[in-house]
Length: 175
Image (cartoon, rainbow, N blue to C red; front, top):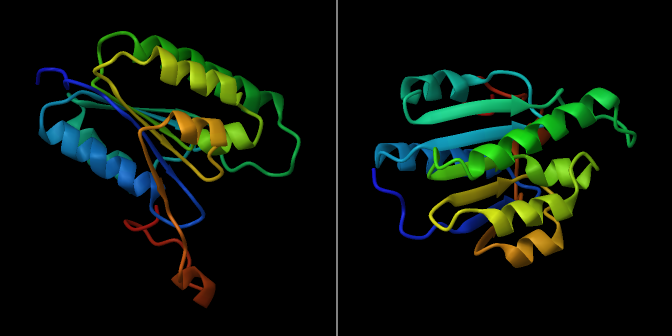
């Protein structure tokens, strides 16, 4: 696929379910159009059902994980900080490599909020993004400066969630 004419910056944030799901939908749509997609997952380290599905598009979609799992407490561990730093270094290199038409930084907003990644670093990534690359940032607690830099911002708001009725994460839906 020829590169997109102009790539925009999209942010999916908020307390509701669906941020990563929306980004994965974009990845699927882009791959269907022949675009090359990088999905860089911060925080997360486990493989879920979406990874199995995306393997079918391995010629167009690359998934890399830079996390140690769910973050607990307010103090960051050296392993968490190293994983995030490795992720940022790799994302910066790959974003400008010309290899990808879409780059998704999944849970990057959480990584910023938790102190794993500096908001200024994400803003620099936005500023250095090649013009044709679509950049998608997901996660709760999006920094106000990142929201200002974005071209599209969607806030997921929870109205009702079956988890509050005791329903746990379901394979193929939440994991």
